[in-house]
Image: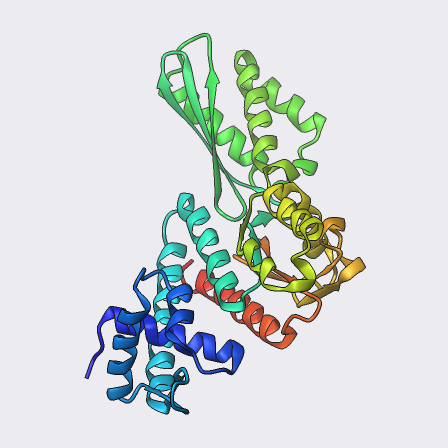
Length: 344
């Protein structure tokens, strides 16, 4: 027999509370633990129904309830279905267009924070040593061109270039051939002054366009820390742990999450570490972020192909469940790696 949504929420609250405390759970606890806004009397009636259905037990007269084996089984099956749905949602998001990447990363951070009960972060993938793959100049109107620049990782940047005179299709085609044959496959460090001078000479009266394209290429390739996107979730989980709930400590940790630039040093160290493809654990003072020195931080690096790499991190108390955290990060890291490889 299936139970309705309200009974399911109450059962889930009983199981979760019992797992945390090991004590029988009463109706008053459930009224505070859920968002159902039900009276204790209503919850008692629902708990009586759950008991009659065999999902919970009352170990002692006048005591609270504990889950039965049947209740645990329904909780686990429901949880697994929810987790599978979350994974499928992440897969669907990952397969969306590139502009949907931020939504997927926010979702990943939220799922990770919920799964571990710690704070979670994930940085957007950045390309290390990226190179030009393709340049396409197209006409917008008489006085504007659009330069579409694709670099490693299939990252695309669009730049508007203003021109004084109308360029016909043949001229635009010649400029495209010249730019791609000269710059294709090169990193910004390989594009030297002599090469730029030669391109300008070949372009003749259109040398200003070459200058603008080179600037656009540099902008597309550059690794700017200020542009690093970091998504966070679960900062409030910090208050679950008494040793971190002190006003000053908690404030510093929350600030680190709100001022996400502070986390960029953690991301940079993870990505540049020679062992960055593995799991890294920072305990207390070892953390690159001084404001979270009272925490432990566990990080991993995921890769989306063509050198696109980002950092996943979990921040929690020094007494965190390291085994669970490492398993969660490894699973998520490999999932991101494999999903991208399969859908290139």
